[in-house]
Length: 486
View 1 (tube, helix red, strand yellow):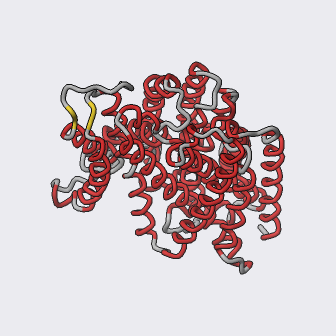
View 2 (cartoon, rainbow, N blue to C red):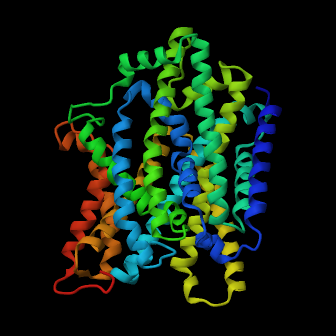
């Protein structure tokens, strides 16, 4: 593919986004930005959330994982399914009952000022690092395969994407994102389906025979029974449940879209349908991974050492121009959701949780402040993405992303205690517990082999993190007291 063709794909796709933006931002106000005027169609939200949930990590990493972890990720996905059901039946009714714009308002009503600010802070920290990492992963591929050869600096590449995202989310916020997510989901899924179709065609084997080959191969192994293994199916399944609850149900970005639905019933329809679709979509990504490895074996292609590079390398260097265009459109579709929802939710959290927008009446001043906060977070995301590139160390970047995952643990512990324990806590001590828990978890993770007879922590570390916070809150509870929000 020529750089001109790739840039053309980016330009056309961006033009479609801005057309949707124009349609959705007319008569937009603060309520449009924060909660979509409570007018989002549940089926539109459900479909769009597929792309937002997948992101560039799924688009490139999951197919590559098949070579080292087989289909074991499917167990995590099944855990996600259970987690989504819990979110729909436990958390969402509470969010709607309390009429929340920022879900962390629950912590203020339940515990007090410091718990509230701590929860919001951990979300902002987690989402900033997580969104920046996802965006870096996608943009770095385009930089490596396209823009480096053109002499375009990485900071300029990132800056262009950030500016585009900033512009189309600036006015409409969540009202716009609900609709742009549908476009992004469509192209991302088309990219996967077309890629699988092209590979099967190149292999010159009927599709049903490809499915049989996948099923008969080691790639299709789902259940791992060695409890020492990170892929042990029990901890994979439990981790999937709690990862979903923490990183979707306790995440302002994901819940903000659900809260833009007209009522709880519509929001639950969205979550139930979305959870079922996600299982099949992730299975499709795993199938893509297996076919990529089959193709490489059949053609004698030497694969890159980094599994994240396998899909882009094959698409851009081995499958021809049409496949390259499909991949580029898919990866662009993955790049935008990595930051647009994050930018909107970070702005929402800052405005509601720290600038007390709900206690102000002047809509004009609130809008000006919101614009400034939106711009500030855009600059912050730019800086963090560029920092990842400057570090240029996969191990360090991976640890930073892991740390972002750890910071959802305190949210899991706070919300679990708030929902299931009646006692209040000593609010001023909550920040110390929430800081100590991820630090302790990181220490245990780094030394788990020595401490626990060869055991290696995986995704289940999030559950342990939440448990530490829960126990810490039990230690600082106020016996005999209850909260008005309980």
